[in-house]
Image 1 (cartoon, rainbow, N blue to C red):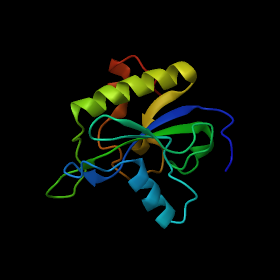
Image 2: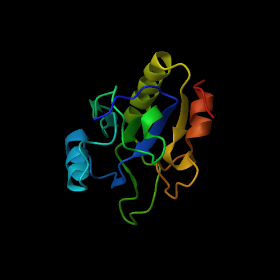
Image 3: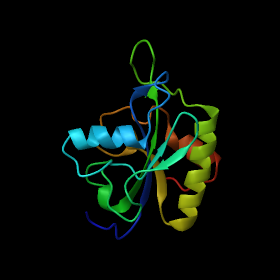
Length: 147
């Protein structure tokens, strides 16, 4: 695997799983990504429904979350993002996940002060709802750097 030489982006993702799938974590997502032929989980962090933060791919390595932007990004995945009944995109994260996300992004923006916070869907050419909420107003409200 290749080391990441710079960090311009902190990217928020979702696992595209239903809210009732409460036990999904980094181990599960790593397995899914291995099944796609990837060398490891694409995300550096996974935030479970309980708010527990699990490490994914090593932080210093290039992730696999946004095509064309992996060499300069840290990737965070919130578990959830799909409606239980319709399987359509939905902002259904728990209060524990929101608290964990805020704390993790705060830590990462201190570590990488030049990095901007965006959602996966905010990158040009991405045709996904991921992370199923608008990251820019959330990040702006909390004083995180945005693009």
